[in-house]
Amino acid sequence: DLSRTTTQLHTSAAVGQAVASEADTLRETLHETRSVVDGLNRQLEATQEVLQLTSKERDDWRITAQEAREQVQQKADDSHRHEAECHRLEGENHRLKVDLEDRTRGETDAKAALDLLKQQTNEQHMALGHELGALEAQS
Image (cartoon, rainbow, N blue to C red; front, side, top):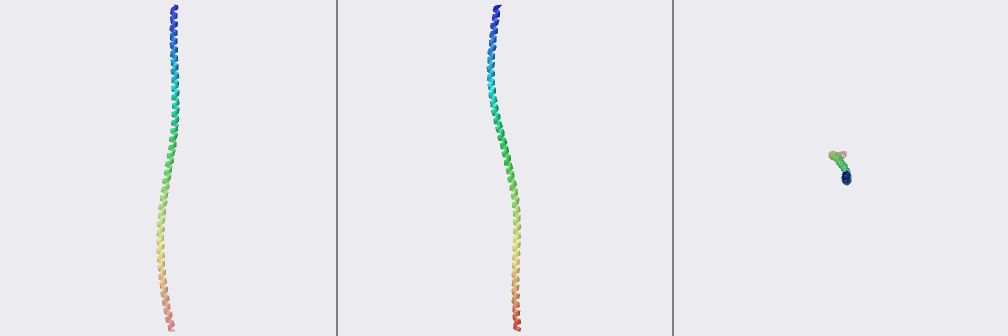
């Protein structure tokens, strides 16, 4: 009876030792798993930081691209306004050119009329001079 109890105690001790050894192994595995999880968490945090930076860069590029589009649109609007102003000035220039040609023609016509009037006045002056000379000769 004592022998059997001793055997059971030895068996229980061996099982207890095996369980304790398995518990130690499980603790080591748990410790290694926690280390791996901690490493993965650090990698995850680093990846999230990179993603946040990448997201910020993307937002910065998006803002920069939007600003560039707005600048291009502003330049296009300015160009259209300048083109319209050029057309307006070309029309004004043409109108002024025509007006100048009309005035030049008018001045030329006026000079010709003045020259004709001078010639007629000179002719009348000479005719009156001849008549005056004839009247003086008669008297």
